[in-house]
Length: 272
Length: 315
Ligand SMILES: Nc1ncnc2c1ncn2[C@@H]1O[C@H](COP(=O)(O)OP(=O)(O)OP(=O)(O)O)[C@@H](O)[C@H]1O
Ligand SMILES: [Mg+2]
Image (cartoon, rainbow over all chains, first blue to last red; front, side):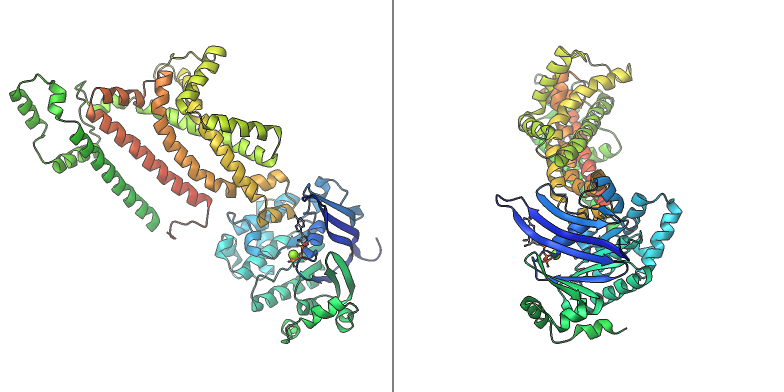
């Protein structure tokens, strides 16, 4: 693939067949993700952001849905490779974090086991090596007292800590791509900005490309070089964030931008 | 720790209430134990002498406490009909009934967990549909009838065991276990089908949980997701059921012992009831109550071990 392109999604269509009439929720989705870049995906609720993201992460495998198009990663089309091949990529090269860190963590497993799991699945490391890695990544996501946190259960942590745990789990294999589906929506504002800063840091240090999904345009503006705007299953506008924000072509994008609250969060996030 | 202490205190109170209830009930309904022992044509002098000897003229509460403290020391009283210690009568029967209960419980778990997983994984598959039908049939069958069916199928048709050919554990331990397998199965099957249904439903509702999606996103196989993540969550409601089922099993074993001709607690209980041998009946009831209480406490402990959100300190 050409210079630094990691992921190339072309003509992705997602259809549900769980009703009498099939329902298409994503039409002709195109996305190119290069090494180390952060791409934003915005759009109102129900526009198909999560469905597209889940398809890329290989997490839409329900029998009652159809996916068409190509998702090229590392020379392979993720939509046509075997389940085994896909699994060797999931959590290893491509990871995902979600909106609700509490329900996304297993309530009855210790943090350590959950963060360690990708190592057990994808590597042959022994117990001590795994422990070292878990400790290291928990420090890297800036959790205070990681030795204590790893012995705790999700319900014992705060929302921000849970999302840090999710990020640690997603990053432990040093994936090429991190898909973040509204990772800060469920958190309060100060925690949001901390999580965003953390993602920025990981992106800078490890060159992990991030597909950042959000409702919050000011957040996307501060974080992403490029942005895609979705509406009713279609990408209606895309391009460098600055360009899309300063000179939106679509009425819909203008409306989204106009809806940004007057207190400019951009400054809050940009402050070091 | 405080929670555990509270549990133990509650359990002790329950024991006192249950034993008091049992004692008073049997002393009120049973009439005069002296008459029961000596028969209706005994002379008044002999009856009075016996009443003195048995402290029957003391107030009932004092007698109760005397009986309770004797129980705690392990003295279960003397059988009216056989004039021997109740403990001597039932001690060697407890292992028989306990073996059956434990075996039935293990069978129930061993049958229901794999089937629950399988049917939730392959919903609408052949096994799933067969189980749903079997469920309807077996669930409405009382244990004694499943006992008769099993005697017929495994004993008469397949000739895997000799109905009525009970072997004592002291003479032939292996033969004993083999024989006990069939009554245990009779008790376990109806419970197991319920447990399958419960576990299946519980697992099915877990499939849509967010943490399952996370587990897949790490590269887990479906079996990995089920065994490493879902099972522990899905088993929670089943544990409560299994605890309830175990108490049912202990009670149900009394009937099934009759069907299979097993000299366990059940047989003594029934014959003692018809002989009005109240010390024996009371002792067995108290033993069964204690087993049930212990089981309930174990369920609580297991539950809190499986689910970290319930801690001993919290409640
Ligand atoms: N089982 C289903 N059958 C049919 N349509 C579905 C099904 N599940 C989801 N959808 C539809 O798919 C569309 C896209 O949903 P998606 O979750 O991707 O939206 P989103 O952009 O992530 O929204 P949000 O911002 O609320 O997360 C929605 O209109 C939703 O109603
Ligand atoms: Mg969404």
